Amino acid sequence: MTEEDRRTPAAAVFDALGLDYERAFAGSTAHRASLDWLLERLAPGSRVLDVGSGTGRPTAQALAGAGHRVLGIDVSPVMVELAARQVPGAEFRLADIRDAPLAEASFDAVCAYFPLLQMPRAEQAAVVAKLARVVRPGGLVALATVPLDVEDADGVFLGQPIRVTSFGAEAFTGLVTGAGLTVLAEESSRFAPDLPGATPEPQLFLHARRPDQPPEGR
Image (cartoon, rainbow, N blue to C red; front, side):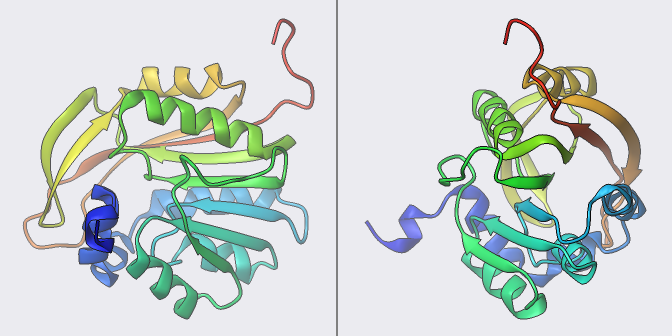
């Protein structure tokens, strides 16, 4: 099996997109607002995991620029290379969150902006549960998704053919709370990527916290 054969569908898409992805979403005020929410609440020098770190901008760049210790992981070799070059103050690894070895309670915060949409629903649920474990008690989790009730649907993303699975807003929020996280704030918006012919898409940003103590019965 060649390296090309081993790439996940998401890796192939984002390898092809490269910096076009960053340019298309650079104007997202909701993403910036989510980062501001997180930055206002993090203690100095916090350790933060950025899942689906892409080109490193804006997420890892904003966090590292504020003095936090950032580990970004992504399935796309092209994205990891771009991120390492653009944000030298953070660490980036080529890894898939589904099987990446991450110790429990090893991060003060986790960001996961849109990395789940090419995973089956069961895997999305498992990943959210994993993120709830790797953040420390009292730690913060910021997540974003496209809240549509679709499963294994054909789509086109910035000119690349993809297959998309997602949850509606209520179901996704339930997934997050079911993983043991407490949702503190949420923001729904519509955003049109900066690309000719792009149409606005719904976006849901959730900000959550791992309780200091697990709920009774868990």
